[in-house]
Image 1 (cartoon, rainbow, N blue to C red):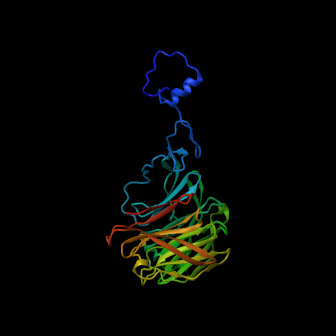
Image 2 (cartoon, rainbow, N blue to C red):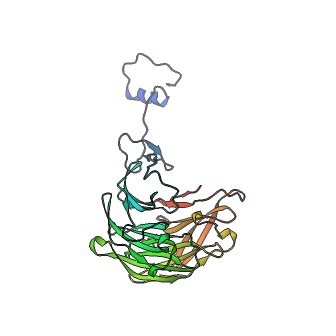
Image 3 (cartoon, rainbow, N blue to C red):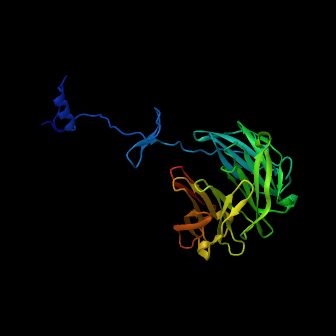
Length: 362
């Protein structure tokens, strides 16, 4: 019997049986292990072992990518992933100009093209607010939304096509019949190829339904404008997400009187929108004190919409919204509770294709 305690030296050759016995006894060094790859692995990649026992390439650590410097604090910013390793950012410069920049993603870095002014033909001036951008995956175009305080808080839409990192714009279109708007945000339905702009006019919740056409699909047509929705939203922002499984839009906002989180479903047609019943939270556990304290996203694997928020008891919660027609039901749970300490703000939530969610907060 060969054991690890036995010293072997000056052996020039051994037969297979002896070699196997040496290995079984733990004598010698080296060796190999066979593992199953999960996904594509290129020679030289750093790899890690997954919980299932396979190995996969490790993702590169992300780095900070500066878009523009010398900006003052800007509350209203927007961004959207465009597919094919491209992203667009929307923000205000220090000179109060609304600009967009398209970036190309390579590994853990982003290279941005030149900034281009969005509000160059209308909606200019100071006090730009409620900026938003959506991506039409059918044409590859984007649509911008904003309001302008110095222009009586009027709201505007503008479409642009993208070539490389360069934007080509169509003409801006006013929404809400020149009314002052607040609480504006955008959604896009890739199935009907229609966009939905939601906003408040005074204390009334309203929307505009629009389509793209014309040269380069950069012409915006308002199919419906200045139409009412149930609800009494605060004038400080809401969020909207498209549910690809049910082919419907879900809207989340705060009630102006109670701060309760409200949810409503929108079924978008080619020329009109059908809304479901309003689902309203009740009590401090379902209220949130700030528009930055909630987030919403679609989770592909679960085929449901996920959301997170901090309630007025300073408890961080998360949940799922399910649809039956246009009727919403929700199921939520407590994530973190630091004993009524005001620990959480600036919520956001994102989902991976495999159904895992990342909740970011400060």
